[in-house]
Length: 251
Image (tube, rainbow, N blue to C red):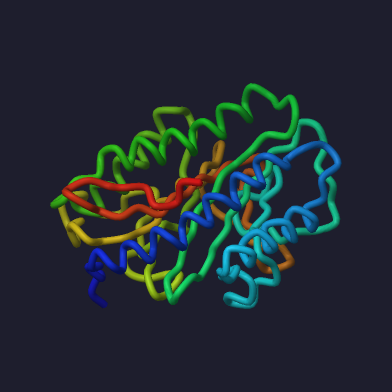
């Protein structure tokens, strides 16, 4: 399946959908405090999205029951909101999607609750810094596999490893489109499709401490590392405009 090249009017629609995601994530960050329940935060994000005339696109997607993926401590991605109330020292990831006027938005952040450990600070920084390093280095004509290699090497330079079997992706009129963009390189970097102006996609570094192998927990959603240790996750939707990447999912 071909990777879509978006017209300016389509990128504007994706920008609008993603701006709502950015605002919802900022709301989550502002309300991350000891005693906040995951279900309350989820409801808050849903209200925010709907108040901006958008739909929470994760709700019902592939059977996911909620608006926000709330990934707590050892859960790296796809955590289901529960009645759990945040505690001092927790590490929480929020991943949010929207649909507005037929186009999708998607982004994620990881946040510490109160005073967190130096290790957890490094985990969060690794995910965020990897994401921005990748975005800054995107160029028209670069291969997606070169981007995957760049992401992998940055994560490893921080002493961590990328989660395998889950990846970034194209986005547009569907929440997940071509291409798949792993946070690691399989094969040769100088192979496969090239990044072109007009492409829109999500980059989402998922950070593990020691083991890259994922384990899906009994609820069928929560993804942890085989090492059972805490991880982190950051994501932006970007559009390639004028030969470089523009972040669409800022708050």
